[in-house]
Image 1 (spheres, rainbow, N blue to C red):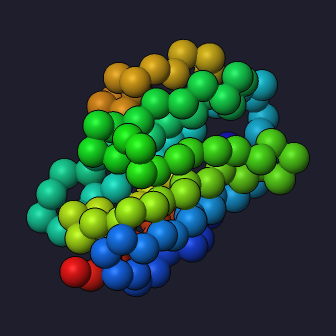
Image 2 (image 1 turned 45 degrees about the vertical axis):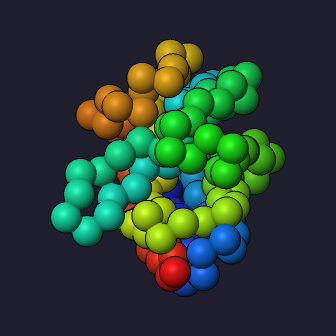
Length: 128
């Protein structure tokens, strides 16, 4: 079992930046597909970005390409999401999620059910 705890959410004006963190309790497997999802009020949860911890290969939704960066610090068992040029439409609850394995691709972002481990979420609010 892996416990995930997000932090770093908050309120920011459009054009601003935030960095989210996701601390994992332990890595029992040699590789994970780790991702950030978000859910805005009244909308379905959507995959934002993913990373394969084995080789740090990353994938992004079109809506955040060039603005968001996912990264990891394996020594700290921590996943990060650097968000720049934030827009009001980025307002959502952001969740960290993971599943063990080496199969992590761009379409993993649309396969929410594969993710076994989830954090409790951290709120991001972007005002215009």
